[in-house]
Image (cartoon, rainbow, N blue to C red):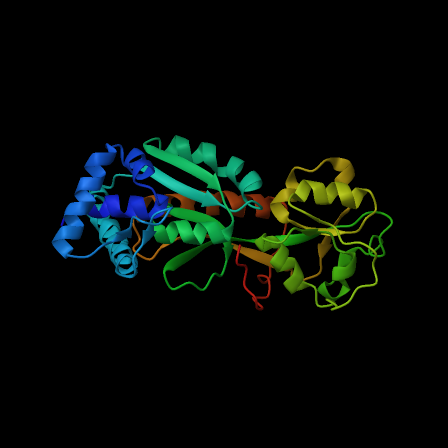
Length: 319
């Protein structure tokens, strides 16, 4: 049994196709098939049911894949130990970022990180929290930036910052004349929300203590874009909540609609998350140092005083 054979098994399990798996592994399909067949003969079991289209794992194959993933991930630790011993910060690093963080945070830290750590080859994807968790567990992401807590025993979290919520209230709204907003003022029935699947949406719903089971309104608006929510609000269709960093780039006219909360200011917890095996921890720590420093500076410059994070009521963000 070899690490290479286990790596090939994982590739087939993921792609459910020998040809696609071979392409991902940069080997010929006969080579990959032969190595997997040798492993099956050695173990005297069938890992894959080749009669199914697409190919499926057998029951014992599912257990083998789980263990193979642990072994392959641990094999990477040897190089990781050497890199840490040498103080080397470099190599490929796959990072996922949730959609409500990506457009504001990435431009703030990417240039600085590349300049300070030019040997790191960052591969960045915008993904939902659900996709992120799955990819971290499968070894397809080294780390991610997401809203927490996730309460997953296989994933570790390091808080980067607490990002305040800011109200965006159009002139025709009942709360526009309020200098400051209390959480108790919010009503889910006149709130524009991100569509289902966004963790920021879950946070807003948790925050709205005036949530009702029924609504008398004749329509409900949801969007996949915070920018769209601002435009809909400008049309007088309701208020919305924005993550603080999104308020830094809006125009002067739109800033007139920003209303801040009374203390304690509700905020979301944003963390860098990674597998409990702590592979490439030196790069994770480098990212944490740069991002935390930049965000602290940005929030302090705006004189935002964060007293407490958003109430961690159930359910926790899932996506």
